[in-house]
Image (cartoon, rainbow, N blue to C red; front, side, top):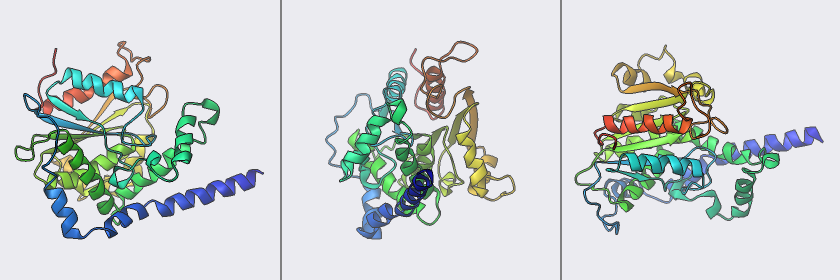
Length: 318
């Protein structure tokens, strides 16, 4: 029985791994190079988003972690963090409607297999069945590897950048004025935020990236981003995979994009508290506190608000 289950699990992993890059390749095959790049360079100006007065000084785009199933996160904890950021920095427009683990912003619950992913999503909240729900994490983690892959990553990251640009347009982004854009990615969303930043910066927008416990590669986008902040918890072992798995982050790779950005002072790594990567005691936990009595959620919000101040957003309200 056990060997059969292990074999089935191995086959499933192999199938997921083989399918991971195909979605972005299929997306690319339906478009011509010039058409895609032209559409990205001139986002749809017919946006019906109401104008904000005064206009936002910056835009924050949030990409969720590998446990997400669509672009509208159902995590109350993540929504609470974003709501607090929006309250404390009111002149920053906060958006969170991009699903970073698929092209065309198509969530797992918007497919023919919605019954399968929907059930796994429900099982995420049931301790006895949570192991099976890790298939969502596996599926999305493989997309993170696609984003970091120099062969398939450019296509995948272009597709996500296109969706981010569309999201900015929906929320009233002024492509003539081009205020700063900060792409915040949690967990696997950190790498995808970095990869897509190459194309967003190519539009002339000043783009910065904030990684919350992200597994980051030495992505070429480091040559274009204004700054990368990597915020991590002392007990987050997952984020250590970045400097371990990607040779460009090794100290011996002196001329990699990562090392060049570090030497130029455009990469800041900061431990913000004793958090774990996910689950209890993670970056969004409001019940556990550090030695000073500050909740993990508050530590995360404080760090992001501080970053927004450094990119010229505004001083935190209050």
